[in-house]
Image (cartoon, rainbow, N blue to C red; front, side):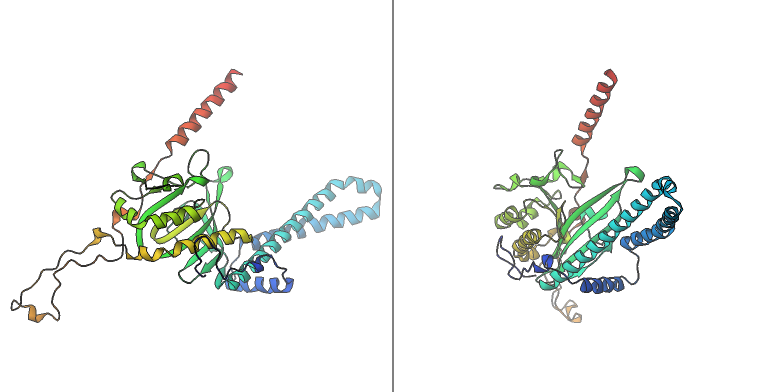
Length: 372
């Protein structure tokens, strides 16, 4: 993946594989290749196909047999088996829908693989429970990332779709996200930029909230677009990282994306698919990433002074220093890359305003129903 100028589209951006006609034989060959990559693992689509086949064999075929026999027997018998015929029709419709779903997925995988190759990237299918440290990757169960497009130069970037499930039974909910993961040079403090432009009516759409004491107000118009949270005591570090030119990049290119810096990763979150067949979405995300990564080199120089080494003791000549292969340094060493424990994770907070509002709404609804 090449690096564009601010707000521009990468010079190697080629969206043709996303929309141009595909050869069905090539799609089938690619699907077989993807299946071999999974080493025989059974995917959800495979399970659906097996279930549909079983339904066809156990229900549809016998019903069609009954229908044929009834036609031979007579018209009155045909009227009697109409309900059975309807059930058979529904079963066939379900099978067709499932087949079309599998076919659409295969075509999408094929297009994204060709799109990745055309733009000097690679494509991967589904990854269960991806080992990423972002806030969305540690919640719920049945966690999986899908349709991953990965760039490897000038730094590692992954575009993907992600989902996880919370609750159980009828109360279970599947949460879906699109994300971009960018590998940084060094670990940085856990910083979150909550984009105001994509918030819901009750506030942030992020799956976590943070203690208000960690909110840091920055200069200029930055607060009109983002709410920034950084660990207590790391305010000066956040100001070092978010210089005016970097703040301008985020405002111009990522104002509709939530941002999280954690360990040596930067994540961009969106509630829409990030890996998609829509060329406009790719142009937007490529332009955003390209505009930001040109400034990440200066972040590589950041060091956490809380990890500073203690000054070494200087040994005067003649006091035994001749036994050492080198002279101990007298100056304090530069801190190693890393983050002290107090800055590695933000402290979470509760969404009391939402809870109170929902409680009041429920109480009003209950009273109105009781009085009526």
